[in-house]
Amino acid sequence: MLPRVSATVAIPKPDLQQVFDNLRGSRLRLIGPTVVDGAIALGEIERTEQLPIGWSDEQQPGRYRAKHGAEKTYFAFNVGPHSWRRFLHPPRLTLFSAKANGKMTIEHDGEEPPRYAFIGVRACDLQAIAVQDRVLMNGSYRDPQYVARRSNAFILAVNCTKASSTCFCTSMQSGPRVTGAFDLAATELPDVFVLDVGSEAGSQVLEGTSWAPANAFDVGRATEAVQKAERQITREVRTDHLGSLLFEHLESPLWKEVSGRCLGCGNCTMVCPTCFCTTVVDTIDLSGRSERIRVWDSCYTTDFSHVHGGNIRPSLRARYRQWVTHKFAAWREQFGVSGCVGCGRCITWCPVGIDITEVLKAFRSTGVK
Image (cartoon, rainbow, N blue to C red; front, top):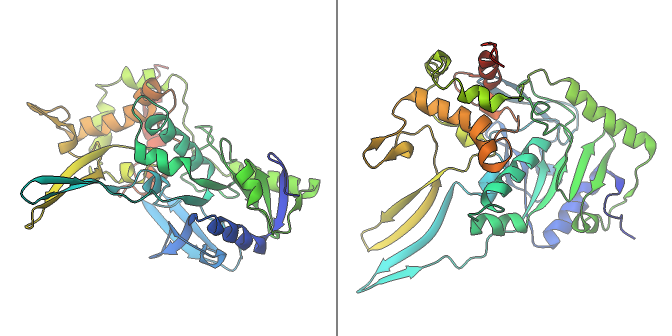
């Protein structure tokens, strides 16, 4: 008999491969962390040996280093440059193609969207998926491509047992413990994975493993491991009245001060797991075949804010202010949630190391709220 939904079980760590095999047997494409070009990034995997076993990372503002050690851990690292939105909301998507051959013929891509199993989704990223669900699936304007990918996705989440110096998920109430909708949520211990079963699908993929109900000792060790990660988080953001504070200081000289350091590269928006801005590009070749392609865009690009008659955000100051106020103020008004989940990617992958937590503290220092 398989474990019931909401049960907590333990499996030997080598049995994770059986879980992988069961998922692939259901014709799901496994996407998980793997080492690519010296970084821990997301890619298609088939075997546990492709996970970053024995790898960890060090993150600081504007600095990332992956390093290999002797400890045989599977998930002893934090979030990298990729987030799951690149698979649910792809950075490049052909909407349709057309061929001029006497008359214009529209061709739609007949391929079914891929069915994914996401391996190693952290708590902050799970909340980020929930945020994009609100925007792209559960709101007034549904993205059919997102809906198809998201509806069929299996999620094997992982509780963090180590925190990066750039994490501030505790401030955003998004981690380090996994909450929300998942199929399985794992806590890695030296000898076993302690798994919370969150769905019938999560229960079924444990078939063939040596699962057993988790005993009090294992549950206690798993709880302590996550609490240890929580104690390691030192960055924080006060969220009370944050939206009104930012809106009341739209003309603060702090915007100019911070944007004076900003390169306008848009890295923060590219690595952010909740951003969803896109633009449409039309291409045509010499044969007369054309394509309409949707690609990621950023509020940091000048073209993004160009409308008929001019640019509504011509300065880098205005574009940086737009990003911050949307994430921490307007997003909540639009969608009822924060646009930030505290993953810290925007801090790590900013070339000049701008720290959003310090920026928000500077506005608090005005003493208004």
